[in-house]
Amino acid sequence: MNNSEQIAAIYKRFQNTLQPIDRRIKFKIPHAKELLKVFAENYLKTRGLNFTYLPEYDQIAEWLADNKGKGLFLFGNCGLGKTMIVRHVITPILLIYTDKVVKHIDAVKLGDFIYSNPKIGGLISVDDVGTESLEKVIYGDRIIPFSEFMDSCEKNDALPIITTNLTAKQIVERYGDRTLDRIKSTCVRICLTGDSFRS
Image 1 (cartoon, rainbow, N blue to C red):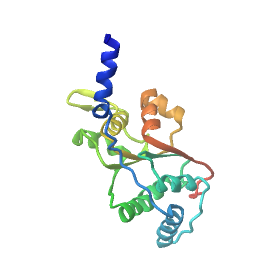
Image 2 (cartoon, helix red, strand yellow):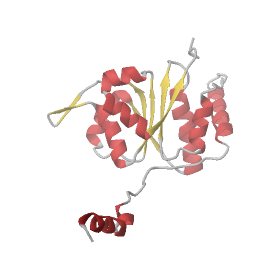
Image 3 (cartoon, helix red, strand yellow):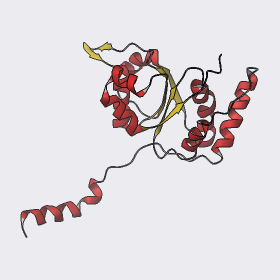
Image 4 (cartoon, rainbow, N blue to C red):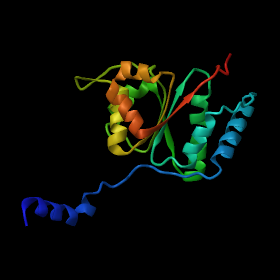
């Protein structure tokens, strides 16, 4: 037996132990589209507002129906319900139907969160990415909090749920290609379009 055959035999023998363990958070919620509508309508009704169902919400419902171990990245124009959907629709649906708790962080506090949580895990929502300070000094090192957050999510199989008004080009300009690549590898990306509901 030559060296390549020996290596192949050893690899085959230990193949099962070499396979990475998939620790990503996965869920499948039945009737996700109906739930999304009901929770959104009820939340807005308490505020005296009507719910307008955007076509892109179908993609959010598909994510809820089977996230395939990926987080959610909502981007697009202001005033289209990104924050409302995450905080007041997705969060209670996940809690009620999967017993999973979403930890919410405003992007402006992301630097402090990274400082106090060096190993990120679970379901974490970061709202309004792009409004935070680009850099933070931690133990004398300058870091980019959002880039560190995305790196940590990928390394630790955390499930990020992110909202932003930034485009892909603006994300690259602000955080670099590597961070955009992390977003693509860890999240389902959904762009919301149209006019602001606030106008």
